[in-house]
Every structure is written in C-alpha cells, then in structure tokens.
Length: 626
Image 1 (tube, rainbow, N blue to C red):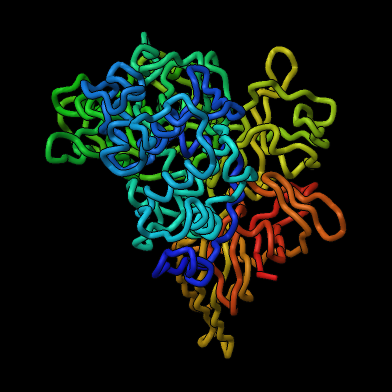
Image 2 (cartoon, rainbow, N blue to C red):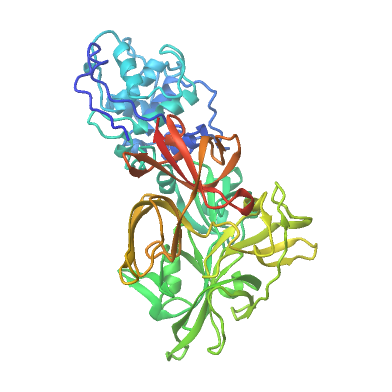
C-alpha cells in the first residue's frame, strides 16, 4: 500500500516537489460516505434522514461542519452568551460554532469585522478551513491566497469526487466528499486525520466504516412494551435493518434486540437467541456482578446491567429453570426472558453437538445429563437435556416442540426431499412456491450450519441430494427448508500463503500449512496425512485452528467487479459471495485488502468452489497491480 510522505515545507514555490504521495482513490459510494459522516456526527440528514446533497452551503453551515469534524466538536454547546461578530449575535443559531471555530483559528471573518454567515461558501474557503483541521496555517504558504492551499488540496487527494472550481459555491455533496477525503488525509504531523477523532483505517488504508458505524450504535433496547420511547427519536423515520437485511419497523418482533443511532437515523435489530437451562455455577462473576455465561464450552458475555441482575442470585431464576437469552450484535446477552414467553410451538434444525453437561437441580444437587445443542432454521440456538439412552448425534435433523414454561420435546426428523430449479426471483423451487418468510438452513454431516435467505438460492438447480427436509404451510408453500451442504456457505475461505508437504513414507508423511482468512493468519500441521495443496486461495472445512479438510479453489479471470457480481473475460456474469475476501499479491506475498481498493489499476482473478448452478460463488479475489 502506498504511504504518504510528510511535506517538509509548504511554500507555494516548493509545493510541487515536497507533497505527499497520492493515495489510492476511494471508491466509497455517496451512501457509504454519508453513513460514516453521520456516524461521526460531522454531517447528518434532516429528521427524515435526507442529506439534502444538492443544497448549497453557507459560511455558517460550513463552520458548524468544520467544528463537528474537529476533535472537540462534541463539546460545543447549542448556545452561547457571546456574540462573535456583529452579524452573528449570541442569539444566532451558529454563534456557538463560529465562536469555537474562531477561538481554534479554523475560520476568519472579513476585514471589516463581519462574518457574513448567510453567504455561500466557496471551495477555496472550505479547503482553507479543512487544511487548518490538518494542522496547516496561513504562514505555511507563500504567494497569494488560495494558490498554495489549492495545490496542497489536490496533492493530499482532498479533491476526489469534487469537480467545481475554487471560486464556485459548494453544495452539501461537495462538502461530503471533502470531509470524507479529509478522514484519510495526512495531518501536518503525518498521521491519518481520522486518528485524531479516535478511529483508524482498515488493512487497505481506507476508512474502517464498520468500526465507525459500530461506535455510533447505542443500546441495546429489547422490543417489548413501550420500547420506542427509549430510542430518542422517531423510529418511524429510521432506516431499519433486521438480521442484516433492510426491513420495516413493523417487521420487528417481541424479543428482538435493537441498537440505534440518532445521527444516522438507523435501527439495527438482532434476533439470535439461546434457550438454556439455568445453572448458577456456569455464571462467571465479574467485579460488580455476573460477567459471562459458559454454555457447552462457549462463553456469552453479559452486555447489560438488566441481564446481569436477572442472572445473578438476586434475580428471578433458579437452577433448573428454562430461560431464553436474547443476544445482541456481538453475541452478548442483552436480556433474559422466560422460555415460554419467547418460544412456544415447533422449530426445526440440526444438532450441532451432543455433550454431557453438568446441572444443578432446584434442591442444589448436582447431576449430569446428555444435552443436545441445536441450530434451528429460525436462526436461533437451543440447548436441551435429553434422555441418556437417546441416540442423538451431531448432524441429526430434529424438531423441538415447546410449550409455555419452557418444557420441550426433541424428536428426530425423517428426510423429505424436493428437486427442481429455483427461479431467478428466489420464490419457487420448480413449480412449488416458497413462503415469503421461508426459513432456510444449510447443514453438513458434522453439524455445521448456516442460515440462508431465499434469494441466495436464485438460479440454483436442487437435486435429490441437496435437500434433506422441507415442510409446507397450509397454503401449500414451503415454509421450512433444510439443505444438505447445497451452497458451500458453511465453510471458510482464504489463501494458503505457505505449504510444506513431505511424503517419503507412511512414517514420514505430513504437512505444515500457513493460511490467512480475512487478515488473520493460522498455522496447522498434519502427521500421517496430506491435504495435497498448492499456495493460493483455499476452502477450509472445520475449525480454522484445526481444519478437517482443505482444498484449492478454481479460478477465472475477471474483467470487472461490482458489489454483487463479477464479469469474466468471457463476458459471463459470476456472482460474488457477500463477504468476498480480497487479497493483493505482490512479490509472491498476499496482503488482505478490500474490493474498493482494487477495482481500478489491478488485474483480478476470481476463485470459486463450484459452478453457479450448484450454488457456487466467487469466494476470493486476488489482485495484481498492472
């Protein structure tokens, strides 16, 4: 990745020779830029989330944006008792921002002692203020203003996406590009500006949008009762996501765990749950109460004080009670509910593990019971003790029938298969319609599983071996579908960066494999067996730390890529997996990168696991600089 060089002098005469090296152009969309700037509370939309990008910006409005983009922006109040300029009295809405900006030497008034708050700001004025955020002052430039400032503006790549001249009035879209570009620009001291705001860049040197947006999320709030009053703004004006998909507010259900951002006008709802037989000795204590739960070897951190109280010895639950843990965005316990209040009826799924788990009864007596862990088509996990003589094992299809109070019966399912091609809309298998809310789970024989949406199956041909179970509703639509490793989405994908295999004899057979999965490196060795691999993109089955199998992926040369598909050199469209892993290959070394970084100036090769008709997707893209 190219790095910026710190300029030593910033006079106009030396600007061309001593400027930072140009960084890779950002390909973030306007929507993505808006999300980042809203999350940072630099530029937000109106009460309906509209960013009003076509509207021109006044000097007062731009000053507020500059103050919001500064490290002390959140400390500026909404009012002041000082009138910074005669035409900006203390009663003016922008007075506190103008006062703060003048005190920080980010903005100047006119020579006649006025500010002209309602005057449209020009690009040169906006650039000058942005450069002051980076630590540059007027004394760093020689010559007539704004020649030196505009030269530095271009060489710092602050001009990406901006096409107006220096004397043209700025729109809010111009301001959006300028402030987004500012985040990755080097300060006068040489560090990315975003670091002064407490954030960083990702491995590709781009704004880490996921981390920025996560930092803006507040909550959690559980959907129950008058939950909307806890949000702090009108949720009906928000963009809503539920389980990673855009949704409507009306689609949120009781027990959903919601995070929110007022500045982004966005709600994120999570639906994961774990049903558990309460065991006080599996609650890990912290400094001020319960900190985590250990369920079948997996730790679930406790995220809220309400959940901590419910799971403490002061809470309402006692050993042997069946409860439901409502999980938040990072798998932490956001809330606890009686199992009967959140789950009655029947769910379907696959047993992921069978363990002998310790329990304590209501009388305080310890015992061990055979326990099944089930991944269900509804996306939740369920843990239930079963009879010791039962023959359940990982990979079994089961249905769980529960009644109020949490009592449940786990029963083996027989196979039920269906064949046919899924239409392009993902609404039918052959002539059999899929219900609008169809629940789909893809499983393998080891108990691994992944929840799918119907659109994932569009265009696939399902044969008798691809479907393990399906169920129709009263309307004759398939509402439950369990697939048999039909998509390959259960597995992990990355690149094998080094391989050493020895095959001299059975006693001297083994391999050492070093591989990277989305920026994390792993090393694994085998004795008495080989994977027979070559360096490059691979599919990894089983745990990343101890794979059961690894295999090289197939390749295809690409002409171009967008968010959803790639175009091959044969002008054929090939879909990408949602979380495609992108690597730059330079001098034989792989560097985890991003799709945004390699769209232009690189030769791209896509790597896939199976044909599109069989559910294949491009899992890995390797980019080489042209």
